[in-house]
Length: 331
Image (cartoon, rainbow, N blue to C red; front, side, top):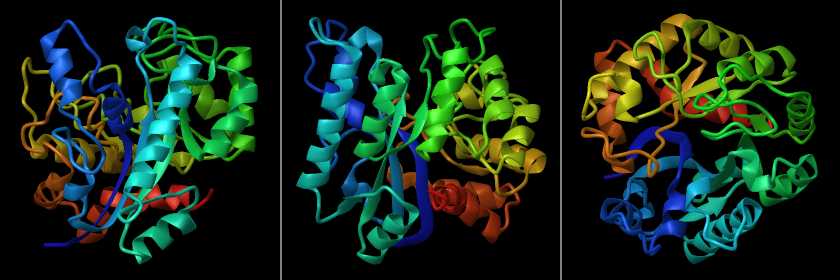
């Protein structure tokens, strides 16, 4: 069965998970998590092309991401960035009959016309570029069109949600932001400190994106956006992507995740920021498995939950894909 709903996801860690598979971790749970991924064609992770093949319109931002704690001895974060990009290119070549790497909204449309998935690139944590403004040109040449200045750790660009949350963009971070916008690379605020978010909102000349964040009013996780943040992002013409991480949806301990709770965050974000500011940002292959949305093929379950939460068919199409694509068409 081919699903006609749009499916455009602003964030997953699938390339990292494929790249890290086979690492001899001492922790058996960590080893099992990465080894389950396999490759992009078929895996035991959350995303693969066999399951995504059930959608007539599927586009995915694949994040180049590496945890500093998992960098092999003798390597560096920039070297890991190169290896991750090479892995992305290898997956694109090995699956060229099913997926096309895309750099513009027009190329996404062409992939859909050919009956293929569309692959887009982001960077999660500028450490993969050594936080070097000069390396932004390389990232642009790779096809990166979305970049988060930080991951969980503060760096010379800004504090993060998890470390130095009082630190906003540094002077160098503001220069970095300006160069990103000159290259038409969207800034991603999902891991930025609150202070960093407000600095981006103040200095950005273009829309910006929270690729995988939910509503803090519903669940108080610091990775989520406050209502004020949602309003500012919407005023700038940006989009936030619904994150399926159970601990971002509900503060209850050992919460397994329900599609209804994702829809509850969606309804709240639309109420606060309007129907044009919300999309998907699953964080698939970077989070523990969501009970009701265990992978890419479960998106019809989410679409049904959005309908039950009162979203119209037009609103559901916007959330499931059209809003993220609208922003990307501006590249």
